[in-house]
Image (cartoon, rainbow, N blue to C red; front, side, top):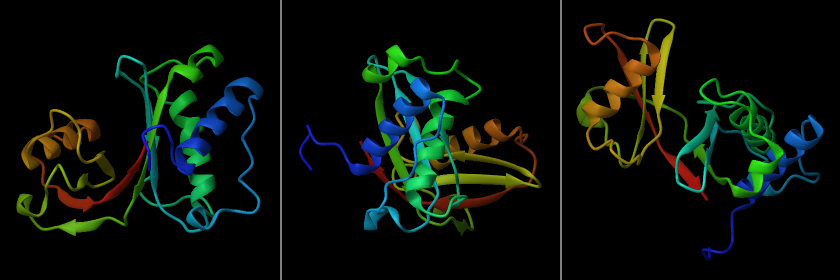
Length: 174
């Protein structure tokens, strides 16, 4: 893919955000569904401002919608309007946002830190009902220990609590 082209996943996420911030309605899924969007998967949509700062990021670990197109639409709207860390995206901001869509593989149990690699795998840490997730290949996250510590902090899990570790891979689209 050339640098000037974006993926159909990112195009769909951008259209969903534009439609929602202007009309306050959910964009319908494409009909017919493109084959690459017909299956189910968890997905994250990340929004960044021109300066590279995060503007929103929401996703699902496992699918919650009947197809990947609807998963991306819902998560794009949530990233733009429901990320509790940020105010909702305004219509005048949409054109300046850069988007990425991460499509997740199903999580698999990691038996130890040795099974994690923050460049290749995202991590999920679980203790009881609390769960923290971190996508792979993030700037400044260079070790499994750092990745797990961030996941635990996000979930409100203290460092001395026992946890279950999971890993997953992503296909990242810009």
